[in-house]
Image (cartoon, rainbow, N blue to C red):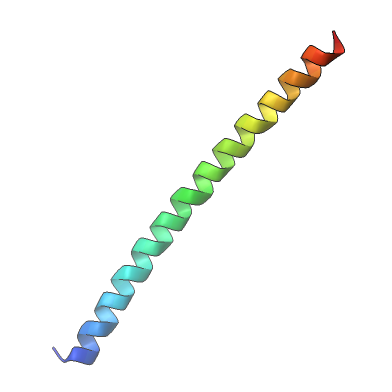
Length: 49
C-alpha cells in the first residue's frame, strides 16, 4: 500500500468519525432545545397564575 493510498484510507476513516460525532452533536442539540422549550412553556404557565 502506497503512502497516498494510506492517506486516503486515513482521511476516509477520519471523515466517518467526524460524521458520527456531528450526528451525535446534532441529536444532543435537539434534546437540549426540546428541554429548553419545555422549561420555557413551564415558565409561561407559571407566570400566568
